[in-house]
Image (cartoon, rainbow, N blue to C red):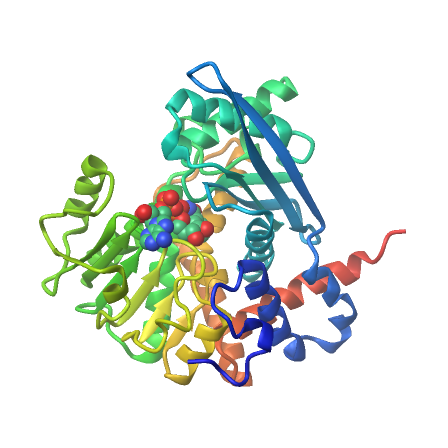
Length: 427
Ligand code: NAD
């Protein structure tokens, strides 16, 4: 369903994430504070992009080379913050987009960071644990010139976890000659990690969905929920929705999609994935095709896997009331317009998945102070920050008749550009 309002360069499918981001900046530009517009070009350009060669010795004795990246999109509001992704499809332009979304997201939830992101072009499933450790340590060493608790603080993203964060912390600390727990977040609890971090992104997805549901007068109890991606974000979001009385009617991961009108037992699905490697073959639900997943009737649809999943090809068939973007960039600009025209509310990634960076901020604060908080305290603070941020965006969206994504970009971009203009141009 091509859309006449869309610039010609975006009317094709497979728009890259960086083009998606640039289009989002174009859509917000007319709504920004006019006094800040002279600075808008800074949003269209990453501040710095580092490409590194990551050579490692494989278990076979051979040497393999991998390409790694770290992008600082904008540091006007503070040190860089954003995850590290290990995936065979990682590219510099994808990392640029993910870093840019971190800039906006950190401003939306008002954590004192700029936007950064990193990645290595690798299929970690093809590496042994020892090879993965060598890859992580060499990549961290190559990034040594840009990392630091007050310079750039990575976190987990696709295919990276607490163990990878522990290796990053250890490698950086060895290179610095001192233990620096605050250089990375999403660490194990025993190494300065924070209670509540593991579930934080999924919990934030739930909190923003709950706030949207209040505005739209939709109940969570008994709601039908479909989740794409059953990793850190998707699994936690599905579990917390189920704990609050919703029915998880469909799940999808790289192994396949499953469906159950009666509702899927999330803990059983997780146990199956841990043992079988994916959702494929889960006995507690029916298998369905990847395309059919997008046609499942639901109240909340949660893309929590990768970019470019909701496209011109499937947006017209989606049967939901609310899309809550657990993943970064799951909806193309063309699909966004289709969902909007069909009256489907989209809670955009820059607020919906900001729970992870919010609790990462708590983790960093706790590390810097060496004083740790209870899980109840963390979840309460997370709930307050996420609810206030969502409600602020909702108010802008209502007052100016804008979609939530544009409203979130108005709030985030204005904050970034205000900081940028106050700092001024050097020299
Ligand atoms: P993860 O590696 O833990 O899980 C990814 C899940 O997506 C897996 O279940 C995988 O099988 C599935 N998947 C991957 N490609 C797929 C495809 N093409 N089709 C269907 N399923 C697919 O990763 P994660 O940390 O849960 O991250 C998921 C998304 O959330 C990413 O977009 C990430 O940038 C975003 N995000 C993560 C965090 C975090 O704290 N981990 C924070 C904010 C945003």
